[in-house]
Amino acid sequence: DTEVTQTPKHLVMGMTNKKSLKCEQHMGHRAMYWYKQKAKKPPELMFVYSYEKLSINESVPSRFSPECPNSSLLNLHLHALQPEDSALYLCASNTRLAPTGELFFGEGSRLTVL
Amino acid sequence: GQSLEQPSEVTAVEGAIVQINCTYQTSGFYGLSWYQQHDGGAPTFLSYNGLDGLEETGRFSSFLSRSDSYGYLLLQELQMKDSASYFCAVREGGKLIFGQGTELSVKP
Image (tube, helix red, strand yellow):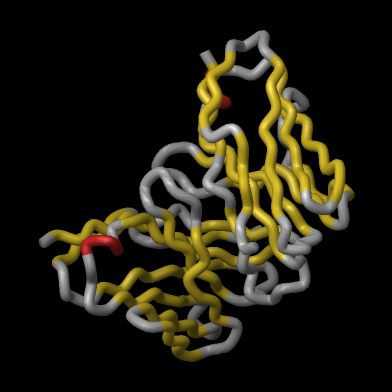
């Protein structure tokens, strides 16, 4: 199994809603990432988890709250988002020690904030 | 920090060869990676250069010159399905930092 699975694929939420994005991988990878991508832009790193511990937070607003319940799962909890947070949210994983920098990405969750 | 520069757009015809350049400025260098992303899809890893020289994987090749802080992705025998965005990327500690991306359009 070489897949990273993200759900939901599409999400529309209001600014007062609370929702969660989910990511799952069964490749035994111990590093998992959340990236945000706007149209025609590169993926921007948000968070990195290494061995289920948050190792990097790229100064992301607190309305985004990551969680890593176990080595296969990664969640991103969303609360009180702004319309400018509308984007494609990509989850990725790798072995952490891979020198090639190869990340395995999911298909993403496309978020629209109204 | 890191910065990477690549052309924003490239257009080529089917069957042709195209080269996408990437120049980088880094405080520490661990190699250059390339990713492909089709519209609406996930980025997928194409290649990695840790040392100077050319790496070939089928129709795609990637080159690195560390002394020039420069690399390129070479796509041969272009096909319509190669129309996509191509990102160069470098590692910075535990992070992968992407260039702004080059949108490749392949015309019939």
